[in-house]
Image (cartoon, rainbow, N blue to C red; front, side):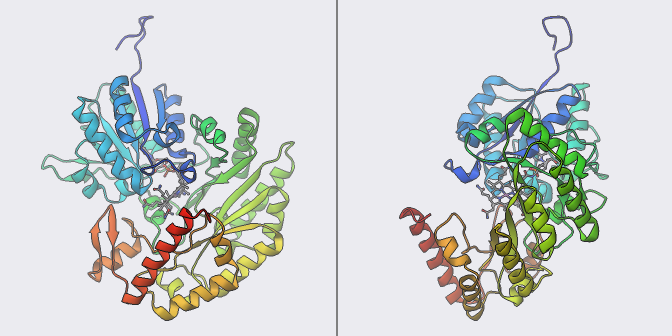
Length: 447
Ligand code: B12
């Protein structure tokens, strides 16, 4: 391709986030940081990139396909980080191929990475999957493609694609991302996110050292060789926040780290150093973090509140010890109660993650958990808010619970929609009634 000035025109990459749900919902307006990181890395290397988030655009998959077919980007990158996006991404690729699109289609995200065989078996329009963190691998793939190589043939570490026999195969030796060396994400989507009244997203650390049975993060970040948790330096994070304030007038930030306080003393020191730096800034932002209950230590969180912490997504999950143990949480009910109490005393809003139902739930546990929810005030808060505590444990590819249920012959459905039976039919009934009540609550405007 040649541009007007006779210079070679760089190929276009479209980074596409398919719809997160069938219908647009306010809760889904979060900033898709993954594509913004990829856009920054690719642009640094001279590629022309456009970013599309269907939810923010208010487009369904058919509309997205029509638009891309009109634009004819050189390469399409599908960001499939949420379960619904995976389905829509598969459909989008089919629509693109039906419409005559011939460029490479590359997917990334949790399920495509952790179940690449099943995914590539089904996603006939997708050529390959970048497994795990995308920056290094995708950049190398796109560079090689720009240099004229067929991406389906180049040997970039960490790419899964169909082999000669049609079966998916993975090139070994995945590249690990150095978190402080990454450019800040290009904020293509932020203006639309802010216009919806949602906070900016920032990723200050990657991975998690815990092994909760339902979580895919450990497996996903474990796909690369290196430490299971990598925190950016406080200086690097605060510099990014400063730019968000200056360039976009950001006032609220959602840290999307799975585990914002890092491991042990090192994590605590990093958090305190972050607070010291925040205090020195002329600007202020309010921020939210996700934390494990044992990390909620009164002095640390008091300090964080002084520099803008307002809300904590807390991985409580259950008020029943046997259920916490089944979920591999590595915490006690006492840890949960203590963390909730500390946050309340400090006047910080706690948003507890809660899983009331799993494959081992008994009727007695259900009673115990409801008493816990009532005692901690979570139940009454949930009743009047967007908080959903009547959740069932969802099984995702790459998680320890997937392995366990498969080994026990309890896994039904497929990798995009796993199901499992409850141990007791009365628990099943309680779950159905609970979900119905929750939907009715929504219809009656209680939330
Ligand atoms: C913010 C967030 C949301 C936001 C939306 C985020 C978005 N991007 O659209 C909201 C609040 C809507 C949300 C909802 C849900 N979420 Co959520 N969410 C997150 C969270 C905390 C951060 C995502 C993020 O920005 N990460 C930072 C960026 C940089 O990483 P990334 O997106 O993974 O991108 C990297 C790679 O995946 C890859 N990559 C991504 N896209 C692409 C594209 C290409 C072409 C390539 C090559 C590579 C690539 O490279 C990127 C850079 O390294 C993650 C956990 C986490 N820490 O990642 C959970 C997470 C993604 N959510 C999860 C879940 C389960 C949900 C819910 C289903 C929860 C629920 N029960 O309701 C709902 C889904 C609702 C729905 N409509 O489908 C799970 C997904 C598990 C799985 N295996 O699929 C995660 C991993 C949490 C967890 N610990 O299990 N979520």
